[in-house]
Image 1: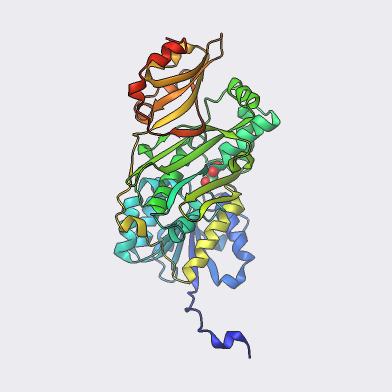
Image 2 (image 1 turned 45 degrees about the vertical axis):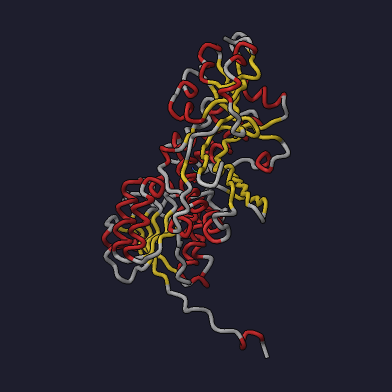
Length: 427
Ligand code: HSE
């Protein structure tokens, strides 16, 4: 007799009838992926698009420009939202949740901006809203943070969460491409946002980090409350220094508990040692390292951008809906009381053509300084709040890169005083 005869049947799975919003890179990818997974019992009934005139690769009968044809169709029990416009996406998702439909989205900007309202809607209408594709595309990080790590045990999550910037940095540093050409390639390959400033200025990574904070630590925060920058200021001379010291430069998102109730979170370029797992996360790949008390360290790596990797995550959410899966937001609901803080110190490398554009008095401690025509830099310790409240380090060609272990233990730098500036010969 087979073992199967002795185990209880699986819970009844739902037949999923999907209304899809958007038929761009990811939408089309999802359609193709669904065609090759018939066992999923999920089919697309209608696709809502903005531009009716465009030539499409599937039958015209699928398409509509009227959102209500999906939202008012009672047979459609799942709305998959994959459009570009975050405001329009919010109104679609809100309407669908209010109508009791399950929703899958990959729109990190929209989710990060409306996290609390979306949470409220899910609870009020007792329906599921899943968005694994919004963070690190193919890496199943949200469900892992949600299900596997207990809040008390997780101490940090850090990694590369934007595929385009990682692709650009790899192409510039490993293959000698110009920034412009590398960005163009990232756009052609469908990795970049339609407004690539969202990628290269770090907004996209900050949006993703704010979603990860909610699932990892139960901390709900607006992306604008996170200290972040992108990769636009990184110069050839910074790359030369990285090479000399056998380091790489990556855009790294970090969330790290600094005590039981406070969490440091930031997205900044960072020097990464070659033996760090993140050093070998290249091109459009993303990589995340979690640290927790008992499991110690986990490293996740996978494609972080592109049609199929994102469609794979959306597909995984659709599959989870068949078994009535919902995020429970346990860490948030348990009111773990972990709040974001900027009360910590960072060890940074700051370079500029003219040393006078580096606000040296903002530092607590400077341990290295180099002053040369067109190539000056300092390495020192600065309070995170001072970076959060000021913009000098993002202007006038100033480039700020975190050192390999950026969070400095809470030493009382005030006691050491600013004499270090004089010692370094820069004031
Ligand atoms: N533009 C995003 C990236 C797409 O490059 O990571 C995936 O979220």
